[in-house]
Every structure is written in C-alpha cells, then in structure tokens.
Length: 114
Image (cartoon, rainbow, N blue to C red; front, side, top):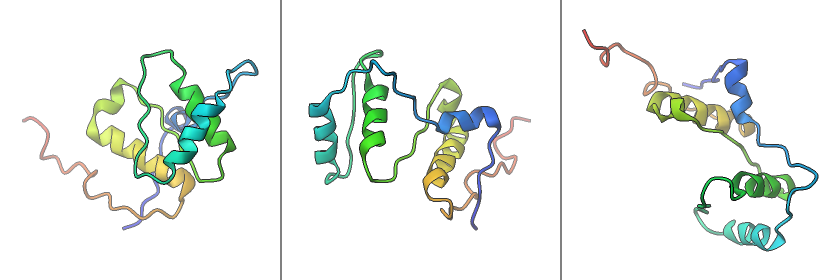
C-alpha cells in the first residue's frame, strides 16, 4: 500500500534543514570527508552539543548534488511510532512516490492498557 504521510504544519518544520548564517565557519576539509563518505554505506557524525554538526551537514547538503533530506528530532520522537512517521515523511520529501506499508504504524488497539 502506498502512503503519503500527512503531518501538521508544526511537524513539517522538522523537515527543513537549518539555514546557514553568513558568518558560519566553512570547513572545506570536513566537507571533503563527507564527499569521500559517499562511497561508504554510512557516515556517522559525533560530537558534543554546540560543536557545529548540524551546521556542517546543512552546509554539505547545500553544495552536494545528491538528494538529501532532513529530520530534526526531539524527545517526542523517542516514541517509535512518532519517529517512523517523521522518518517516512522525510523520505517522501525527496522521493514523493516512496511506497511503504503502514501496517506497522496502524494502531490496532492491542497496545492500549485496559
């Protein structure tokens, strides 16, 4: 079954990558490392809060020719169902025809406490 995830306008803002300030630090050597990572199955960026991870990735997505999508996460996304809806919406932002089954996301009532 093909689906089109409909999320509220508030949630849709989570699909926009951060804008770069005019004074952001351009780190060409790190951008080059991302380009090298295109030939690997996964690139992991890990650093403490405030070290520029989002700025770096947003900068790279702005200069690359490959399709890229963004999903900002917060505590509510710790719920698997919420996360999957956001993840599917992210995929559909670059691949609108992404056909994914919603069977795993439908609430059949079995998880409710009685």
